Length: 187
Image (cartoon, rainbow, N blue to C red; front, side, top):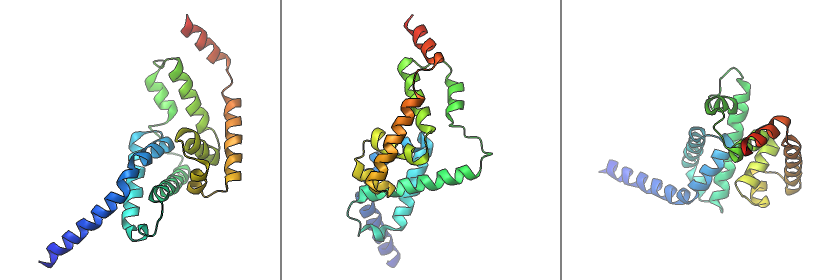
């Protein structure tokens, strides 16, 4: 009988955790996808964050804004993964933009081509600039939210956004091969 009561207690803890986290899953997935660039890694990232959050569910009671807290945890988990991946450079990333471009070939239309150029340009930015642009410009978070997620003063955040956008603007100026592509596609 005691074992059944323990199972029921665990279910109520799980249910309480699920009701707290469920409204934020969609925004977490969008943010994780922006960070990682592919579905499988985004789902893995969310799973890691949710497992960690479930283990620390006692601390979750004291959190005022659960969504912000989860996004901050997601950001920090991504940073940890990003840094650890940089330490092991010999691994082949099957989700890399270069490999995907080889697989896709020239099947992109003009808007898809320029969207891909934009994403490639973002990937060349510094980590802070990339994160700030993805969170603010692509995910649509406010400056205050991004400042909380990245644990950075708003002034510094604005500086990273400005410099990142400026560098993107410089990188994405039409190159000769892009001009030829645009002319060929228009006929």
